[in-house]
Amino acid sequence: MGTAHRRSSRRRRDPEEVRQWVKDRLRSSKTPDTIVFRHELPKTETGKLLRRTLLAELENQNA
Image (cartoon, rainbow, N blue to C red; front, top):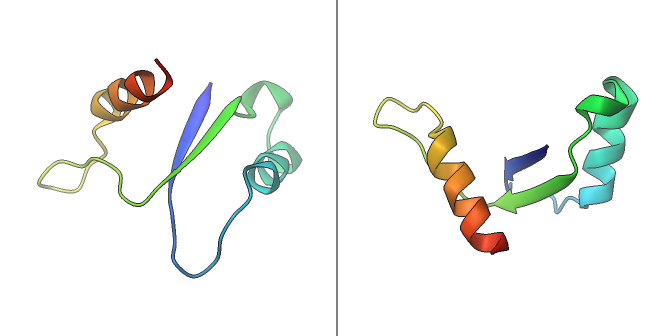
């Protein structure tokens, strides 16, 4: 399982910090294996996240 986050210009986040935050709040099975920060997430014209597009981009990035 992985997660992608839109990067905020206010504060730089550390992937381990995010992983620990999630681990403190969710079961260990829900903790992401990979954390990726991005400036923008792919969205439809109505603002919904394009999950398949994001997954394909992440798979291409890791290939």
